[in-house]
Image (cartoon, rainbow, N blue to C red; front, side, top):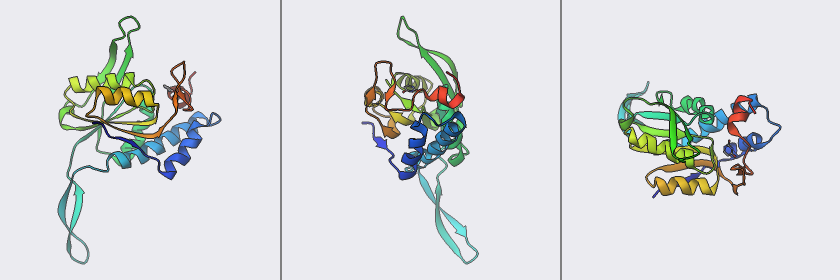
Length: 209
Ligand code: URA
């Protein structure tokens, strides 16, 4: 069963309020998404395996805990996921970065991959998929399916804002994937936007319309 974590830390909620505000311009929006992603990285790495090492301080030798060296990969879903990469990398600098771009064929409704470049040892890595908005959940679920076909075994999904519908879609299809979100919002509207949400994350990040 997936674990769904809503990371309602005061710093995250404060920054999210600015991110949601329609008066926040692209420069600040980008910066704030990066900062919240960094804070989310702290939470999503909470259970990484550790090992004990001997460290010589200026005073004596002591036992310390360090990361056991689990290899990580950050995989943004294009294009809005790109906005979360630098924030994640600032806390997990040794992670490799893969990219997935896909769309739904309007006739077959099947996901069509238009770009997929992943670390070649993806099967051995702890994979963190990032996408700021978990709306219907369709593209995140499809991206995770694609990652599994390419061999990924340990996958987590990190989003800024999720609709309950999106969480259900991903966790029903991928019960082995834990989901981390800064906020679970109310619902999706008839146009597929999250309410209250923040609008179109990609457009706001990149200043497009
Ligand atoms: N994608 C977005 O960028 N915003 C939404 O509200 C839903 C999907």
